[in-house]
Structure formats: structure tokens, C-alpha cells
Image (tube, rainbow, N blue to C red; front, side, top):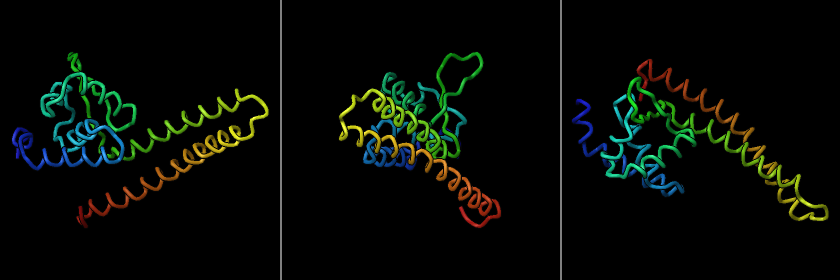
Length: 170
């Protein structure tokens, strides 16, 4: 099947919408799921923002804000084409490992917000101090656990990839 036929294949469109609904149930805007789902099943090395808008029947503004957020979250990357001013995007083969690494960076920023407020909190406020300290400590712990999860994920993925390379499954 060539790329043009795949673009029109109903299985692809169904996956994009099902994936978008799953992401929406997880608390993300549906459009983020649609863009990410579309890129995940694209056979092209990168896709333009105009193509995303056309394929998903979305406005240029919606695609722009959605792709910015997905880049910030670590799900997709911007791709430059020499001599072309259009915006192009791609998803890494291990989008979930990339997301996990990006999420860890976000956890550090969240921890810093609580750390900063602790430094500014007036004396004589034991309740807020304890809650802020617990929040800071939670995000610090979670960020360190993400490091372990990323290592565990890479080991697991490498094992599955090796088995797949030997023809032992998908």
C-alpha cells in the first residue's frame, strides 16, 4: 500500500479518532490525541502543519497551539527542511520514552515552584509549610523515580526489540 492509499484508509482514520478519545479520557485535549495519533501512523518521515490541518479538518491555529504543546510535552519534535519555511513535525519511534523524559523535566519545574514558595512563606505557618514541603518532596521523589522508570523502560524495550529482530513476535 502506498502513502496516498494509506492516507485515505479508514483503519488509519479510525485509529486516530480512537487514540484521541483515549487521550481525552486521560485528561488531554482531543486535538492533541488526534495530532499525535496521526503522526504515529504516518509513513512519512515528517508531516507539515498544513497537512495536519487538512487531514484532521482543523484550523491552522489549532494545529499550531497543539503542536507547540506536544513539543513541550516531549511527544513530537519540530523538523526543519532546508529552504522550506513550512513547519514540519515528526514523532520519535519511542514516543513514550521521550514523553517520560520530558515529563521528568516538568516534575523538576513543579518541585521548584513549591521550593520557591517555601522560601517565601512567613514564619508561624506550620500547616502550609508542611503541605508545601510534602509537595516539594513528592515531586523530587517522583522525578527520581522517573529516572528509574526510564532505565527500566529502555531495558524492557531493548529486550522486546531483540526478540522481534530474531522473528519471535511483533
